[in-house]
Image (cartoon, rainbow, N blue to C red; front, side, top):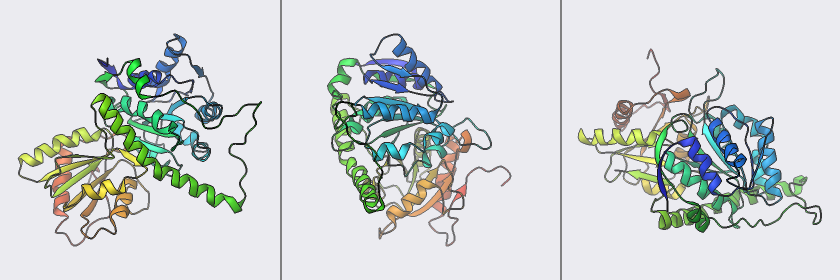
Length: 392
């Protein structure tokens, strides 16, 4: 039976990974993900799981080590944040090209410079095109659930791709929350023993990640794209099974009070819960507002998004990262593209918020909702707006 506990989310993430009976972990500690590494190392050292915890000298080595382990057929895990994720970037597209089902949790944190250890989404946005399935958790419960789900998704024979689970640094990692922690028997029923498609072994030589001449490289990239697009079907099936076993529902685009809404906010990550309170306040003031929460970043949920914005007049997309010199934040740019051919698409406005851990309050979301609604009648609109800049 699941047990309800009060637990720091980073610690709960390590507990969830341990429940998956991993074979190998290699994690280089970096704020605010350090507690994941420390607690997982304690679990292995105490003998609670039969696993190897590899002490490495860098994040690049951590991801390289788990790729090697996955290549031999091991269930492998790593974790990182910010500059550490950038250090892994060289290896990330290799993981997806070699179809190695590694799972990684990312405690999202702003990129330097200037040095900042607090949360935004600039680290993961630079990894958008590395071929990883990418999930966003809103709270500690979703971190636990998504990590367990991630192994089943990654290892599915029709997927065989790496998965990253994103949790907001400090806002989630260092917060104690009530969490329903599944027991080992429940996880074992949900997550089968990993049976790899192909493994490296000196007695049975195979080649993985070989040199690709121009004559075949395009086909390899096409195959990777097809694989991640097709993975959505498996993701939805896994989420449906999870709901049937544990009662918690997961959707690519979760909606809150969007029925008949004229203006809808869109968030990713932990700010969704703050935005929900703002939606309640806007509704009390007589403004028909709603909220969409994007949980599946890659593969992008085109059809679910189009369905979710039907009838919406104004869509206010919040971004926690900047595409410098571009047409807006990375999330809004994708959404504008996804809705471009829709004949009744809403007016789309873009707010850049919460950079480097800047607090975004309920009142801020209320203000954004009201300002977004004004855009419906404006002939001239900014492509994006840095919300809350001091001195403006």
